[in-house]
Image (cartoon, rainbow, N blue to C red; front, side, top):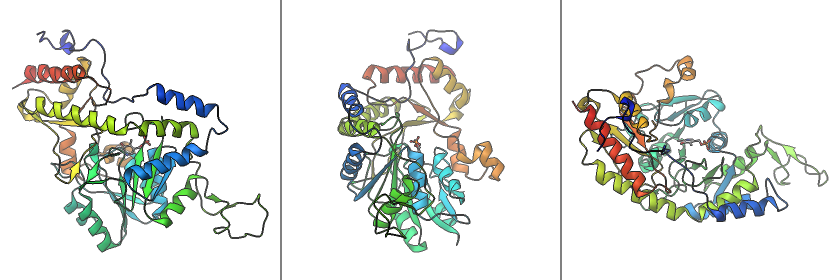
Length: 398
Ligand SMILES: *Cc1c(COP(=O)(O)O)cnc(C)c1O
């Protein structure tokens, strides 16, 4: 085997770059999109309603509201929860910025609770410590697809009268104690970005069993405007009449996108089975590699695995995560880091968040690397990743 690292001028393990995540679009997907383009509806039409029904049925919930992306889904959920200026909302720092930005959109204050060093999900004890009389809601994230232990969070929420919005952008198809994510928290949000479990290009959805939340989410998606006579202040006007009742946005998703979403959803079981199969192989190979900690999974979680994140025991190597990351990338392996703690970003630093706030998240951030994982990946792709990890870690071993 060629053991000169590609970063030092050797031959890379792979000839072409393997991305960390990628959609899987087939002929059937293309066909339904073309049919929708030929239909009478481009935006809000029958395909939006169909995708909402099918998502609701899939996760086992009463209502689903499809929107333009997962960030809009979070924003809409924060609006429906009545989050406003002066409120505090607790979330995790080990997430995509959108999980906290949605709190700022509503003029409220994000409060970061540290993560559990084993699951990398929000730590229930730190969460409880951060509750004040200003706390209005909790936004836990199902990091990588592993569901957060939601029962204790819901119990805490009940005690303090808080709303729980689960950011399940990573967890479509994940089960919590045998029940699908999406029907458990007060509201749950998903994303249909191309790297997520199913895609509509850009897209997202909020699911809920609560009638009031459902009405607010639907209003918020289209400017806060309604034609529903039961909701209008003045219902004496003619049939042209509508009213703006709230300050909403245009967060609509198109029929073209939803046609793709419906077609993708038909394949979700296959997509998830393949993700689980790949993770099993990764775990087998990588648990034997000294210096690599494979993902932990709580017994309450049956993950649909959006991401495969390993922790590097950096103390066992002559270099840090940065050098290992760059060396893997040079081998043509599409590594990534999920995530930079949200409050490290200059925007949050300017708001006054200080480094040191969540020591577990900060420590984990220095040690994690995301390896490629997507259903279309072949077993040979996976072996190349494992070979690259072995090659790089062997070279840098202390
Ligand atoms: C992808 C993602 C989002 C945002 O979804 P978009 O559809 O990209 O707006 C929010 N939260 C998490 C944790 C995500 O991974």
